[in-house]
Amino acid sequence: MSVTIAAEPALQIKQFACLADNYGFLIRDPVSGETAAIDTPCVETILGALDGAGWKLTQIWNTHWHPDHTGGNLALKEATGARVIGPKGEAGRIPGLDQAVGQGDQVRLGEKIADVLDTPGHTLGHIAFYFAQDQAAFVGDTLFALGCGRLFEGTAPMMWASLQKLASLPPATQIYCAHEYTLANGRFALDIDPDNQALIARMEEIEQKRRNGLPTVPTTIAAELATNPFLQARLPAFQRRLETTDAISAFAIARQRKDRF
Ligand SMILES: [Zn+2]
Image (cartoon, rainbow, N blue to C red; front, top):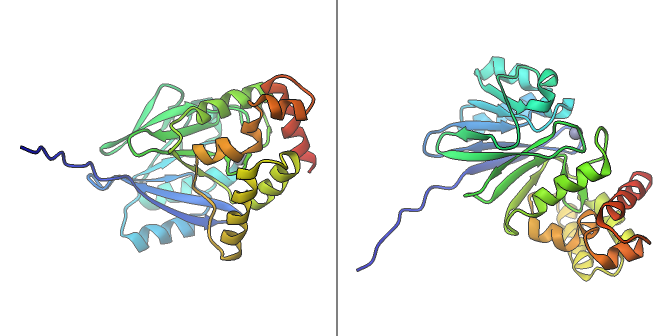
């Protein structure tokens, strides 16, 4: 006798380029049709993507207050009636906010449920959305392919803790970051971690993708653990190279070097 368990239909994800180097994302629960924009970098592109897919926007989920992430909130809310969900720690700076969320909260997209993770550092209230069952995380400007966000508001220990939180997600988790910065990030990564063979191999793939106009996002936790220089800060050999003996100061040194690179 065999038992068949019906697989739950996967979260639908559409990714598109916006502005100079942002990515916009639309996510949809195929059962209910509930659809969310992750951040709102560009109104026309998002409306066009909705039209093209035949999807109806019902929610906007913001990761942080920066204008290239929230600039389209009001226009999209007006055009679609979407409900805006955003970080508790930046509630006063999120246009059109209906619901403020933080660590420990869950947000619902029809049948799909995402955990909210506090990931401060780039901004103080930055959050990420993690769909455990679909193995996908939308991380805004916290973790990038081969990089991490600049510390505009937070401290190095704060950002390190946020990166560790993301790095502890299952290795297969797909990481949807909000910018295509990978080539520039990779040049820095090779400079600070030149003997990393996985990094060298990955950079060849990345260069080829970019030559062909293909995105390097999403990435995975496994790929970032192996090659992202900011996550290498956890390794004693990398710490020694930067003449330090702990992860947080290795991270802080790497971040400062990248700011000047
Ligand atoms: Zn930002």
